Each structure stands twice: as structure tokens, then as C-alpha cells.
Amino acid sequence: MTLTHPHKVSGFDLPALNPDNKLNRILTSALRARDIDDQARVNPSPIYWQADYFDLNRVSTFQAASEQEQQQILQRLNQTLLQESLLIEQAGVGYMAKMVLMAESTQERMLYSLFAADETTHLAQLYPYVPAARVPGELDDPFLQLLSEITETSDKMVLLFVLQVVLEGWGLTHYRSLAKSCTCRPLRELFQSFLQAEARHHGTGITLFNQAELSSRSKGAIMDCLAAFLQMVRVGPQRVVAAIATTKGHLSRPQRLQILQQLDTVGHSHQRLQLLKSLMATTSDDIVSHLDQQGLFTPLTAEEAACYG
Image (tube, rainbow, N blue to C red; front, side, top):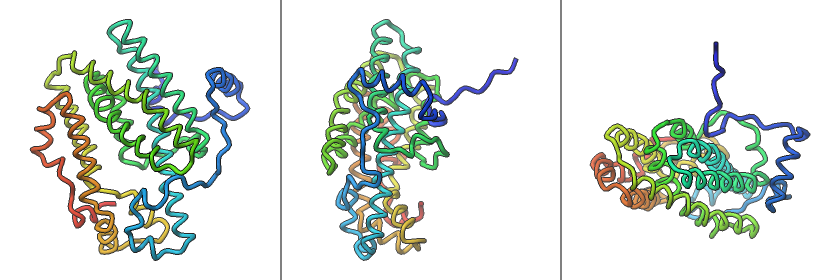
């Protein structure tokens, strides 16, 4: 007997049903019963985060661009932020459902069932802002590829530490930043509303991880995952550079270097790396020490970062 390959836990490869499918009507009814509207009317090409959020006010290439080009760069960066948020919540639904099955007590299973509902709520609320994300496609983002790979592991300690302790903690700061700088009141309030649930998810991950025993095998797998993630952070704001390149055309290495210098890539990465270091240190100084010895909390210089992308 041949078994069909199951969909990934992340759900990134799950197809979207046609709008007239009966399941969609049932889902909409169930969401509305919980006062969740997944079909809110929004501007199809909005700019919720302005140039200063991405530090583009410092970048001479952006400042010299035409108004149309500036709008295109900002629209691309805005959509990237929103699509990433939606896909993270989508992965969260699958992850929490997986943790329901891995629970070791009735209370833990109940908690993760509630957490899955949290992520489902967030996913539904974000859908209207990213209509293109309803259609699955190839993941060309290294972070989302890594997230997809991590959710597939059967090692509960890896899942707890990497996804709940580190990435959920990171997400709290990220969502807080998105909310603070968002120019659209409904979307700003939406991101603010996510924070309480995300804090619960993060706190639960710390509690469960600290109650369990960490094997050397799990510890090694955790460090491998985090090393890959930290390397992505070390290279600085490459998405901003990519958005400029997509709009303006090919950028030479000197141009990329100038943009990264003007974005203060070292300061940008240092701040994020220190946040990640503090999140990891809440549960394991040993893991932090090992990663630190590899120089993974040290940002790349602008010259080094210009070689990426």
C-alpha cells in the first residue's frame, strides 16, 4: 500500500478553496460567530508603513528615485511585511495543532487547542490585507523556508525552544513595532490585539522547556536551527536592498554597499541579534555561549553584507 505524502505542518503548500466552495461559507459563519471578519474591505495597494520605518529616508538611491518608483518600493516592502505575517500565522495554526497531539497532559492539550484557535483568528484577520497569499506558491524567502523545515521536526524540545521561546519572543517585538508605526488604525489595532495571545504562547514555551530534560541530540539540533536563523539576521536589511533593486534594476556591488551603509546594516543587525541572544538566555546560557563562540551574534560588516542578495 502506498501512502500519499502528507501536507507540510506549516500549511504553506495547502491549496485555497474556490470562493463558492461550501466549506468557505461554513468557515465564514464560524468566524463571524466569534466576531471575526475575514472579508474586511481594504485598499488593494496601500502603504501602511512609510519610508522612515524602513530607514529609506537615509538612502540616497531612494531619495533620488521618482515618486512612482518610491511608491513601488514601499508597496513591495509593505506587502512583504504583511505576507510574512500571514504565513507565520498560517504556520502557527499547523504548529499548534501538532503540539496538541504531542501534549503530555490534559491541560497542555487544552492550552495548545486554545493556541491553535488564536493563530486561526490571527490568520483570518490578516487575510483581507494579503489577498495574493491565498494562492500557494514557491517559497523564495529563506526565513519562511527555514520555518517550514523546523515545523516538520518531531523533536518537541526543538519545537519548543526555536519556535516558542525564540521566534514567538522575536514576534512579540516585531508585532509591537509594526503596530507602533502603522498608519492605518484598524491594522494597527489588529497587530496590537495579537500581542496578548503571542505573549501567552511564548511564556508557555519557556515553562514547558524549563520543565523538560534537554538531550544532547536535541541541543545539537536546536543550535543548528538557530545558527541558520542568526546568519540570516547577520546579513542586515537585505529585503530593503532587494526592493530597491527590483524597482530600479540591477545594483552593482558598490551601490549595494552604499545602500547598506546608509541603512546602518551593522546597527540594524546588532539590535536584533542582541534581542535574540536575550531570548535564548532566558532558558539556556549554554546554547548562547556555543553560538557566541561561533561569532553568530556579531553582525556582518557592510562590505561583507554587500556580497549577499
